[in-house]
Amino acid sequence: MQYQRDRLCVHGVLCGLLLGLVGCSNGSDTSGSNVLAQAVMLTGSVGDGPVANANIEIEKASGEVVARGTSDGAAWFEIEVPAGTRYPLRILATDGTDLVTGRAPDFVLETRVSELTQNVAHLSPMSTFASRVEACTLKRRPHSSSSHAWDLVLNRLSMGYDAAQFGNPSSSPVHPVNVAGLVVASEGLGEVVRRSSKAIDSTVQSTTADELIDAIACDLAADGRIDGIGRGSSPRIAAAFWAADAAVLLEMIGTQLRVDGTDVASRLDAAITTMMPAAAGTKATMAVTPALIQQARDAVAILQTLFGDAFLTRYAVLLDTESVFTLPASVGQTLTGGDLAAFDGLPARLAAIDDATVAASMTGVPLLENAQPPLLSLAATPTEVMSGARSTLSWASTGASQCVASGDWSGLQATQGSTTTAQLVIPARYQ
Image (cartoon, rainbow, N blue to C red; front, side, top):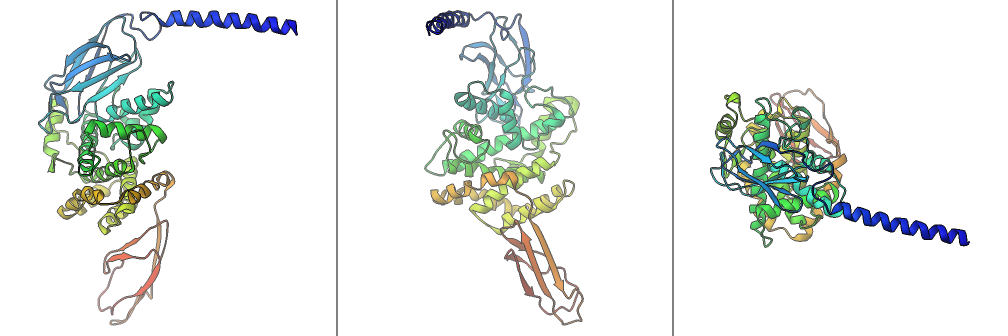
C-alpha cells in the first residue's frame, strides 16, 4: 500500500510540472505552427453582388486588427498580412457599393482563413454563413473544424453553387468558368437574407439582416437543420427564411431572379463582366443540379405545411417530375406575375399565423432528410369509349399530401379516389 501511495504522489507532482510548462508556452504569440514566418499577400473578392470600394479588415481570433484594405472598382482586393500574425484569421467587409443593388451591402460580409498556406479568400453570403456557423459551433464544441461549418452551409445554402466542380467558394480561385455560378449564388443567398429579414420585420420579432444571419447560422450549428431551435433563432425566423428561400430558388431555376422586386439578369451580366472582363458575354445563369432541385423541393414542402395553397403544389409537382433539362423552362413559364405576387404575399400571411402553428410546421424539417418524391398511379376504365360515353378515373398515391389535377380536369384532389368523367365527345387527357 505504501508503494502505491508513493507512486501516486510522484505522478501528481509530474502532472503539476507539466501543466505549468504548458501555461508558459501559451503565453507566447510568436511561436508555434500557426504563426506566419514571413508576410503573405491575401487576394480575393467581395460580393453579395460584387462590392466595389468595400472597407476590409483582417483580424486575429482575439479581435485585434492586423491589416486593412479596400476592394477596387471590380470588387477585388489584395492585402498583406504581416509576419508574426497568428492564425486563424477573420476577414470582414463593410460599406462600398454593390454593383447589382447600387447601394452598400445590407450586412457584414466575412470569411475565415485557418491555414497558413491559404492565399485566396473570397467574401460572400456563403462564406459569411460558414464563418458564423463556425463561431456558433466553437462555443459548443471548441475543437470543431471550419470544414464542418462549410459542409453544413453547402448542404443547405449553396443556392446551386457546385463546390464539387468549382471548389470551395471562399478559398478556390475565381475564373471565367466559375465566376457566374459564384456571383448568382451569392446574389441569391443575399436576397434570401433581405427578404426574410423584411418578413420578420413585419412581425413583433423585428431583426436586422446581420441578426438574422446569426440566428440561422446558430440554427444550422445546433443540429444541421433550419428548424428554429438554435441560439437566437425561433420557429418564426426559420419559417420566414424557408419562405424567402423557396421563392428565390424558384426564381433562380426559372432564370428570373429579382432583387428589390426587379429582375436583375442584365445587372448580374454587367457585374460579371466588370468583375472579370475575360468572362464578358457570360450570362448570369445557374446550372440546375439535383442538389439545387432538392433545396427548392425542401423549401416548398415546408411552405405547403404552413399554407397548403394550390400554387405551391404546382411547383412541388414540377420539382418532383421535371428533369434538370426541362425544369428551368417549365418553372420560367409557370412563375407568372400572379405566382410571384403570391410568393411576395407569404410573409404577411406568415405574420398572421399563430406561434403554435408555425412551431408545428418546423417539426417536419427532420423528415425532409429522407423524403422521397411521391408515387402516383392513375388509370382510366375504359381507356377508349364511344362518343357521348363516360370513363372512370381511379388513382392512388404513396408519400403525397395532396394531388393536383391538370389537363381536362383540374383542382386539388384527394390522395386516392375515383371519379367519373363528363360525357366524352372528343379525345381527353387527364393528368
